[in-house]
Image (cartoon, rainbow, N blue to C red; front, side):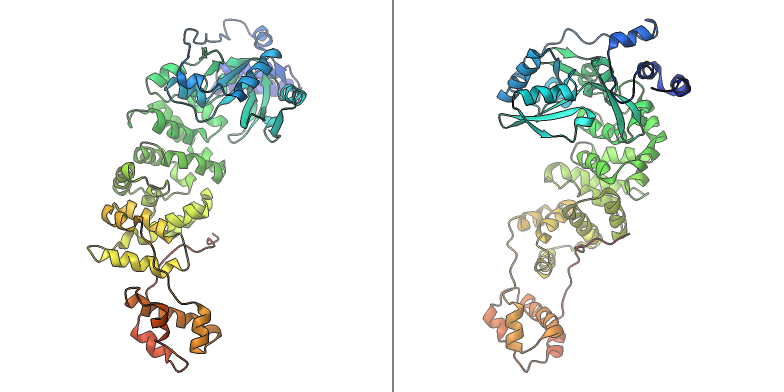
Length: 490
């Protein structure tokens, strides 16, 4: 059990920064063991006088019965619904599914919340011989089962016992209000009963209808519980807001004040949120605002923002179906900056190669009608080494807004060099280190022909007595820059 001194310290800090809801939480925790905590709102209410802890009344007059809602009731959900009802455990939709339904969208997936503990859920499922998918989430309260070819993810109501800005230790509760109070944004803190009744403690529906992105309770406290919520704010702003300038000033001040907290978040988690921001609306406005809030140093991004270039690229992105990393290239001036960012955010190799390629070429893009030949030479000379060059070129052309060249190269078939190393080695009677320079020279001859010479025609250009030095001088080579297969260790 918690020592009295520790609890008093928590309460003192709560008065200073956390607010009455946090005192409410810690008062509950003071009378439970840390290992297996479970408490009810009734017990909690007895600890505090009614005038201190007044739970808001949830929305009670909203009922959903849309086609999108009815489409959720698959065989899997119906089976789970009956099982929980038969065992007297409440079960509700939560999070993004509720938000989507209120926006008349069909949820891509559903999350369920319940008063049943993980142990109780596991016992129910095992008794019915229902397959459990993974045990990884059970310690955090999440049980995943598979019914009728559908994974059903169900999480026990919980509150945060301890948070460090990255992770939370949780205890379970049967109080829907307390669970809603630990969530990030008001429209993510709503529940929906399986008969369509909306449970909304924090006016999330009203915020959604008015296109407001608002934290549950005190913004600063929600951010301090998990600093990744800073990026989640911008992600949902791009998803929900209708005006790219409609930020709450106090919220932005809290974000600026706590920007340093992002330094402790793993690169993988940061990149997961940034990808969603880059794939959403208001990309330019969001990154400009993030830069003003001082987030860039903690995201591995350059300190300076080329605002005009980023705005220009993002304007093109709306109709060119860009890869999510393509607009990001506007932020970098050097390949070293790219390497620093990719090391921090742990981009995939494919993402890294696209970003590297665009930044390598964006300052020296060919102009005029000659650019088609230049792009073709760039492709053909490097394609034998890297098969992703064509898709990388597509993204470079989208970045540049070169629609004509993009159309030309969209279904472009890269010419294939007709000779292999063994053929050159045999006919030229060369070996070892002589083979690579000879291949490069023959490739230059093929390029000089406009990539039209056949294998037989190329074989006629050399033999056992060929002076390769003279041949190399006659056909200069070009080099295509592309990201190394192995990233540079920083």
